[in-house]
Length: 223
DNA sequence: CGGCTGATCGTG
DNA sequence: ACGATCAGCCGA
Image (cartoon, rainbow, N blue to C red; front, top):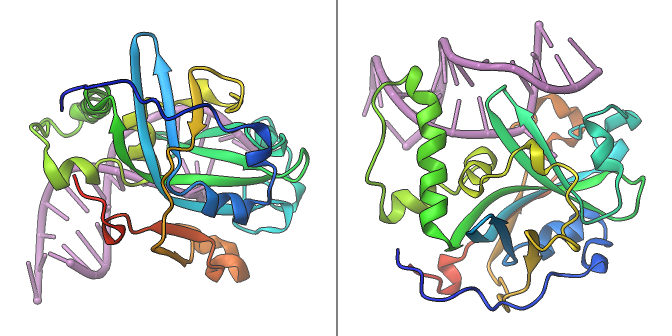
């Protein structure tokens, strides 16, 4: 858990990286590195799991049927914007918009591997756990190894670790020096797809295999 | 393990 | 009311 160097992983990915359709972007995001600077602190992680939400015709999408509200407005932005919303009154979920303005396609970030700034990631997780302490007095502590990685899995936990909240909604990932994606030269090989999680209400779109998981360990990634 | 449950609040 | 969730607990 020692910081050795700042990630010299190159430059923010440009706007056209996000210009493809949601399904393509969902796959392309695997292995990319999300970097977030907050003051002095920098945290970064490697994206390992995504879900595509395919606009106004997708029954699972917040924008289904062309729904345009204050919340969903961000989804209609051109590719490269962060769409962050609060779910169950407790957790933040982060999407990245895809395609052109008006398409309302977006990719939910569901899991990642810690890449840099583990001090910040860990303290963010501790803080978010503390919020639950009022209800569950026993606070988990001393996470390590497998347990630690597991804590970056799940859209809510991922956002909690990275410190992402609705304050980040609408940030443009290709022109924000404090919040961007970069290509670290990671090329995921072992990628599985399957149905999306938690969308039982989506009728015929429930089974669409629009969730993508990179099995990093199978490609030789160890900690 | 797997399945259930309750927390909690913005959005519509 | 309800949800693109999570953690804890219970039973097997």
